[in-house]
Image (tube, rainbow, N blue to C red; front, side, top):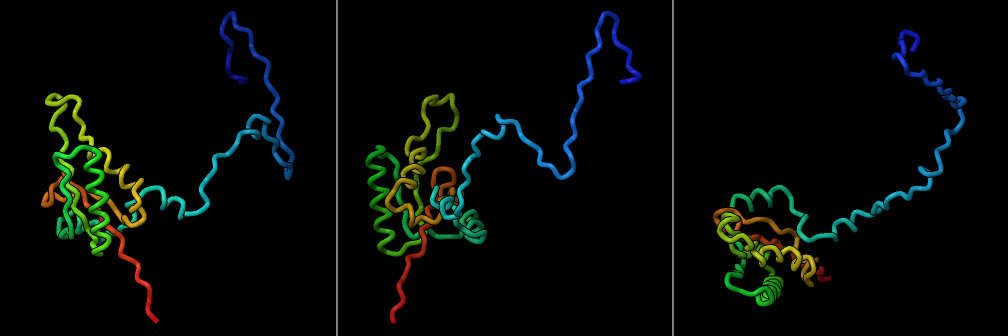
Length: 172
């Protein structure tokens, strides 16, 4: 500041003294900062795992699904269904697949519209609702993953639903 000259007509401001805290003393924070509530952080990883079905596959599964080398045990085609009938079909298919011990279900929802100009309000209602259906389903705990299908099995118009292995109790 010693080398700076003020502009003509400007009054120089008085320097503000800054107090340095003594060594070893705690720095006090303003009351506004101290009163802010901290966001709560989930303590357990299990709480995060329960937020959405379909996040527990290893890399091997993901690679095989992406290549299309996994053959689905069951196929559910929702073309031409209403939202309510599609939900009932999906729920019944999950029931059957769990009872049979299937691991992979191919869910065909149909491809989204090609361009906005063709059908400006079309958005694929069934495809948009499938994630919510699976999350709220009574089968949510049995779903290990939901992934997009490979082009061999329908590409953007289909999904893989990977079910968890059924738990078996040991016989003594």
